[in-house]
Structures are given as structure tokens and as C-alpha cells.
Length: 435
Image 1 (cartoon, rainbow, N blue to C red):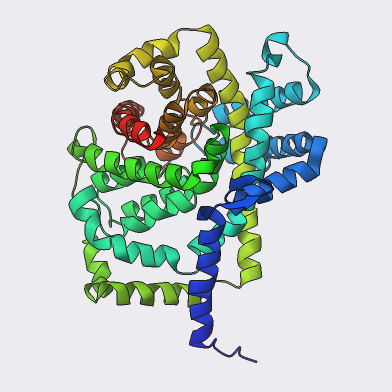
Image 2: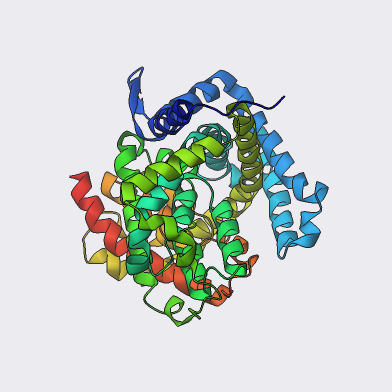
């Protein structure tokens, strides 16, 4: 027997109701027992408190799963560079065992190394990403994403030199996953709807970490009390930096020819803007999977993402912290950023320069190194964790695995330019907002 089509009122309820709940969960702080934060954070704290000492064992299970997943599915033999990442994941597993059972070299048991990584990063991330992914579906599956894309359509080409459809990629990254956004970008590039330059701008300018990862960064830096300020400032700085990098080398020198005119695919956008946004949102709500099916799929995706990233967070995080603590490598790179920081006279300036340099290896390192700084420096560090976009523990290998014609040298140049521009924008903004 055929299922009766849902009444339009149901689509409105999905579009307005479920999207509003998603927005509430991520962007409306509430006060619970004297702690003011967004509902997602309160849920994660409640789960972590309920787990007690078993939270560490939960994280260990997730690290084990992440280490053996590429072996079980054979991806370590198929994907470029995955063998090296498998080695890093195995190292991450060993280090997690050391941290949990307080064994191994005494050097690693110092409070700012393995104990810090496990308790302040690996455990929170292993909880935040799966929990966040469940509620993330309310933001991305029931029309809000499509409506936002329509509204942003007319400003994409003039400001960011990319077609209107790239608005979907941009929003998908911030509320979803950079890996998902890169898949979308790569597919449209292969199909000829993006030029090489447009695909590169999107991959290096929009495909940043998700809101759930930003929550973990904000928690590390004690910024949850100003979460909305942090989130929207970071989003603004990221997109301003992208507008600049799109106009300068190496991105401006890439081929800008398309096999097809992407804008020809967007004829519905010629209608009245808000009307079209509503139509697209309602259509997405009507076509969305059933709520339970969607919930389970997003939970699965969140768990896979979690087990994929936390072993390398542990290994690359440890390598980065040891390098920052016992070698001058990041000091040398930090000196290149220091003139941008010195101009503004921000406190903890040299520490911020050094922390910014560590972001090339792992996005959480600047947050870990700056957690004890003053508010303006912490806020700037939080923005620097996100806005440069490129880091070797995840995003750079993902980009290199696509068909987008970017080399490691070009990606490192783009990272350096984005980091310098981010600091130039983030520091004065942080000084104003912190006062």
C-alpha cells in the first residue's frame, strides 16, 4: 500500500520546528547549575559526569576502533598516505594506553602532555562529536542549509570568486564536516561545475572544522561563556580571509576555466530571494529522511568521524607538544608571525605567535598552548585554530586525496598567508571584544 504524501503543514513543522531546535542546541546559551553554555555542552558534561572514571576507557575503545578501522576496511592500502596515518594511529593507541594507565616514559606523564591530551581533548572530543552530530542533523537536513545557500547565492561570486552553489559547501563545513564539504567540492570539480581555481578556493577557504570541533576548541580555551561571540567572529574572520586569499597567489594563478557554466544550473534563484529560500527549505524538509533514520545515520557518521580523528589527535598532538616544549622549531616559525602581533601590543604576544605556528600540525595545539593566557589572547588563539583551515593531521591529506590540483608547497603557502591574515584581523577584534 502506498504511503500518503505528507501535508504541507508537516513540511513547515520540519523546516521551522526542527531547524529551530537545531539552532537552539548550538547557539542559544542556557544556565544550568550556575554554568552558562549551549545545550550541547551541557549534555556532554552530563554524560561525562555520568561516566566518571570510565570516560577514559570509553575513549580508549574509540581510539582502538579508529586504529583498526583502516585495517578492517582496507583503506590503508587504497588511499594515498594512509599507511603513514595508520602508523600515527598506532602510535596514538600506544600513547592513549600510556595516558590511561599512567605508564610509559616519565617525560610523557608530565601534566601538560599525555594527561592533558587525554582529559582535556581526547575524551571531550570523543563525546562532543557524536552527540553534536545527532543534533547537527536538525541544522543540515530540514531546510536551513538550503535556505542559507539561496540567500548567500548572490554575493558569492563578487566577494569570494566562487559560484553561488559554493555557499552550500561553506555552510556544510561550518555546521557539518570539512571532509563532507571536500567530497561535494571534488565531485562538482570533476563534473566541470567548478574551475580549478574555484575548487581550490572552496577547499582551502571554506572547508574548515565543524561547529562540534569548535565547541571542543572553545572548551579548551575556556570560551564557552562567550560561545556565540567566538563562533560568529571566527566565521566572519575565516570568510574575510578567504575573500583576500582568493585574489592573491597561489590561488589567483590557478586555471579559472569551467567546462560548464555552474550558474546556468541555478535558474530558480532568479525568483524573489526570500520566496526562493523558503521554497528550497520546504522542499529539503519534504525530501528529508525519516527522523529516526536520519538520527541513526548521523550518529553513525559522527562515531566514524570521531574514531577517525582522535588517534591522530593523540599522536600528532603529543609530537607537536613535545616539539613546542623542547625544540625551537615553532619559535622560528613564530618569529615570522610576531611582527603582525607586535603591532597591536597584545599580552602573551610571543606565546600567541609560537602557538599559531603549531596549528600547521594540529588545529588543537594553539588552544592547548594558550589556555592560560588572558581573554583577548585566548580568543585570538581560538580564531587561529579555525580560520587557517589547513593542518597536516587531517585537512591537508584530505585535499591531496581529491582531484583538486594543489601541491603540498602551495598548501603550506596558503596556510602561512591565511594564518598571518587571521592574526592581523583576529587580534584587534579580540582586543575590542575582550574589553
